[in-house]
Length: 213
Image (cartoon, rainbow, N blue to C red):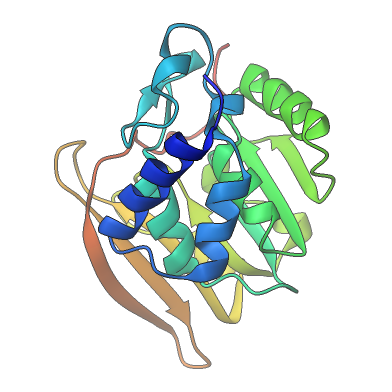
């Protein structure tokens, strides 16, 4: 299935109907073809607004959630962004059109390798994909202007909060189970952290350590 005009129109309409209004985010969502990140049996559903399974028991988030998280992150052209949970690489590809530099990490080596290959094919040179324990972030590249986490923890991980610069924003799902989670936005100020609850979501859990491919 190609990202033809009709499919693209329906895709963008679905995003707008969920509250995605930021022009730069909509433009990035239009330019990055989700079908490049969905393999095999599920390829024909690439433009449906639904999460889809990928390798290693992970998922590619539904486009409206990707767009809403990106919009909440408020990425600026000079920003350095950390994504925890590379997965298919779809979210990182969207961010790469909005930020100066994107670092994306995942605990599964095979997912990182496949995402790297896709980024190279799509000529997205400002993304660095790394196999690492996401709960620890990427201290050697800190601080970050923006951090996005695509797996749910009980609370925002301390190491990630520490790697957010003053004035920076982190968007992540939090919750004690896979049925009750909230998407929150954390803004770091000179005096601490401000928390804002955005909406209910459902993500795979944030797991410590490297994965077994």
